Image 1 (cartoon, rainbow, N blue to C red):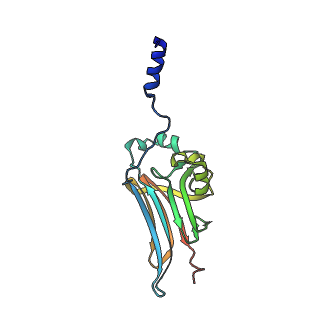
Image 2: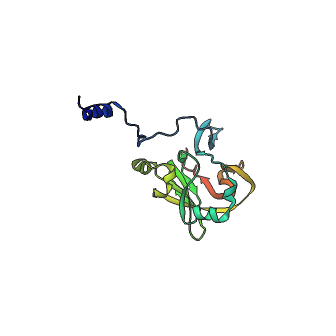
Image 3: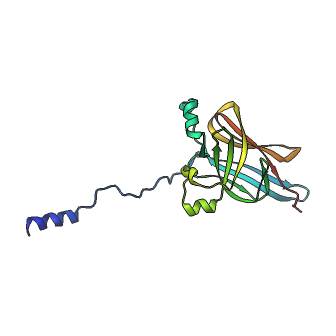
Length: 200
């Protein structure tokens, strides 16, 4: 065997030491995943009327986010993810009115939008479109929203160290709710109501 042939044989026998271009992430239980849910039950007829559920990952607030210039640089004029890891989802089997917009029963992915003139919106995306493009939630900016729900922004009474999404309602009129998104000192809120008029 010539020296050149020997080198060729050795090179073929040694596996490629380069790092593979395709890698996987995750696999462990997502202990930061949370949800909020409202269920409607008719006690007189002993039947469920429907429910709304929001599932989301809970990122931690960091002190460097308190830098207003940094916060503005990553949010103003941007379409951004809401939550952590997998897409935040809204699943409803009831027709909703959110911030004056009609939302049909179904599954939606959620994101946030902030305009250059400081108007905030809750963004609803079609999961089918997101799946067809194979978009991760970190690529929220690349998805086209189905609708933009106006939300008001204020300061939370208590700073939330983890993202918190809640649905609050009055027992005397549970069909009317307030959806709140709180993270650090920030709070976004919008009205939400449930259409039970077609239930028999």
